[in-house]
Length: 78
Image (cartoon, rainbow, N blue to C red; front, side, top):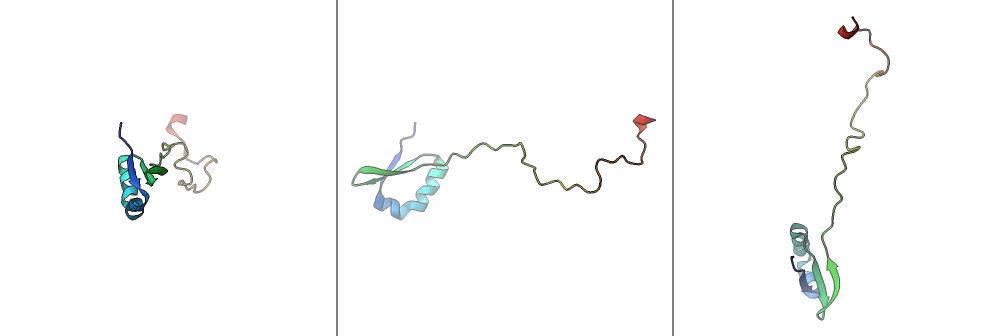
């Protein structure tokens, strides 16, 4: 188990963007302290799993009448 990183608020203020990159990359939390006491926690966001149902919605263009029969006879009908 990876231990959380603890950092004083003043140091967090100067290194905020670098710490955000670290949290995203390592998926570990950073506890921000004031006078040695924890006051806040920077934690990685857990993104939901990608849902494939409906992922292609709005990408198909229907051109013409797709319901009416066509004037070509199929070999299966012969």
